[in-house]
Length: 231
Image 1: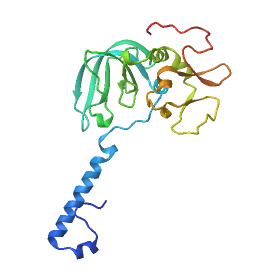
Image 2: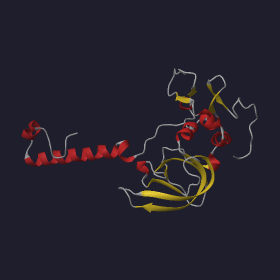
Image 3: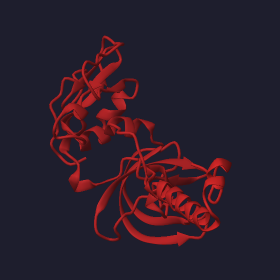
Image 4: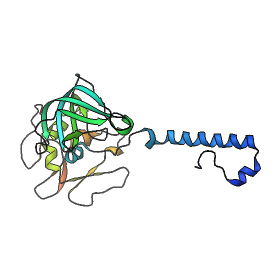
């Protein structure tokens, strides 16, 4: 698009002064409309991620209740600081023993996540930077009661067994695994969409032979049955 009020010289010669100003104004409006309709201008865009990948790529994984929030005036939209009551830590003991605050962008268009206060327990995942835990819409954050039993078991134990595996997303057929450490993730092919059955019920676990495969329940390496208690 051309800058507002800047038209090619050949167009300028063919129109009068009034029409010239009208064309410039219309061009300006078109440019503004294009910016406003651009996904990158007003929306957060994230790649689909299996919960196991979200767990493995996070510094911190906790279950917590959000008990307060405060808007910090830094940056164009500010940062929201949530105060949490940590119920359990699943990952991140080497980073910090207890999480008191979670930081996120105040604007959802910048991938800021919104938690409800004093209502639910949440699974919260994030990264640690300069001693603070940051999260966003592209992290795996969910109300605890909405997680499946298999997801809770994965967070509690199973996912860490597969962090050396690679979950390969299949968006259209044909698709294949290309190495022994891959699990083919086909939820996107289902008419149910994302999150699908593999996301909710399966972990990609490395077996004794070094191969990775989908497993529902406890890894076969341990030869135990699934414990149905809440982690």
